[in-house]
Length: 237
Image 1 (cartoon, rainbow, N blue to C red):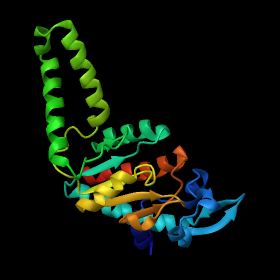
Image 2: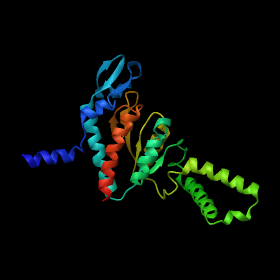
Image 3: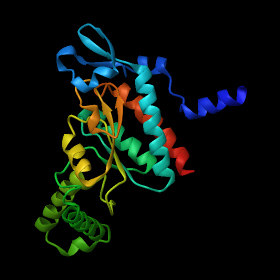
Image 4: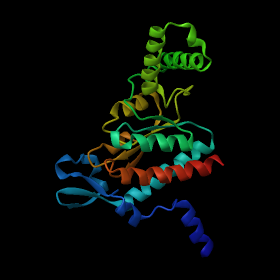
């Protein structure tokens, strides 16, 4: 019996409903903003706000984590997408700790659907970086160097987290499917799997692995990303 309990604990990734409640994972949007397809994930209303059923969140999060565990252990690529201002730092920290590709600024149209062109721009960006590091830009005039520095800065904003993306990823993890709808759309078009936090105003059917949860509170997103980080770091060992 004890062995079964340990196995269950291993498979549930330490997901705790009480901890999720404290993190505000259950708090959806105002009732007027409910997407009809999110109705099955709602268990009540409080102060005119929908409350997400955390039993269902736990189950969906478990499925998403199992999938992440599988692709990372197979050496496949996961791209983390979160461009909402309060989440940018969290996105970058998580991605760097887990060695993931990431987008924390605006999703650049064509990142997936026009990948070959985007890849050429990233190669150009890395070439300028190499020249700067190697001191090769010293032969340029001060004005030219300033222009190249400005270009480098622009490229860093656009491509900083994906500059080493040699091919399309196996999956993307989108933290706000409404704000980063273009990333979701391009992933769908190119057959890239979508893991997504789906707040009550989002169509969960757009994600292959929807995680019904509050996508506005940093504490809520952090809870989900911390679980993701644990799974990724273990899978990489």
